Length: 331
Image 1: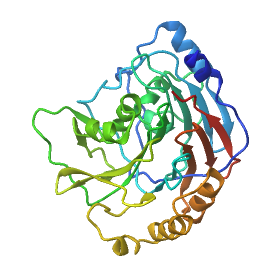
Image 2: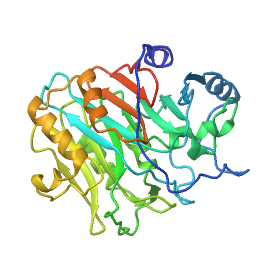
Image 3: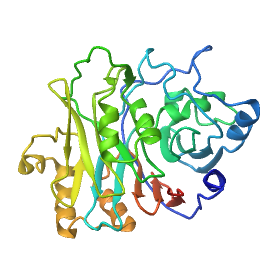
């Protein structure tokens, strides 16, 4: 029943807005590029048939039917990475924790992707499909079958949310014996396998991340339905995680771990978020979260999104478009 609900239960309303910038133009996927699909022909047909355009961003929606290999191609060329973004977790009310972010990017087509792998958690995530080599007319393009590999933010059925932002100060010193995954691919592993912030941090610690591929290094914000949150960064080559010290936690594009609060607030967007979240005591509903994101939007903001970590509600505002609402059945 949960899988039926996932395929049909993301109710649509109206919404608006966006997040990041790319340092290279992605090349179309070459013939023979590994595919993540573990689907049979019928599942492939149903997945591609579910694609529909819902906004002139352009924004698409698609439900991935069946299984995929989240590790395919991990030893190959790493994914390109975005930069920009403003993220926060508002956790002052334990009954309605919320995760929100702006994604600042070039004007590429985006995809709202629903997945429910048989051996992982169902999730809803957002993908810039240009990084699949897919253009503004993706109908029938089998490269969409790799969409699960590149979520730029998302939430799973256990209420675990994750998003990324650029951190040009980050460096990675590989740990011998650990497999290497791309800096965006790690979000898929988190969404599929982690139910809590602690589980997500432990998953990060099992891999080396590759910050190559023409984009900047990254850091990450995590939050879950229990009200936990953490920033994950790479400091002097070593992974570090710092959990929230108050009713909220935020992240922009400046290093956050071990940095005094007053220094963090010198960053314009971080300062605006901090002031508003302090005033609210970390208690923010989805409409207020979207208004706060609007206050820190940039000219290249592509979408704004708020995830209800207990309700499963997702409110998305694509740049220049109307607000859209979805609901992820929670377990």
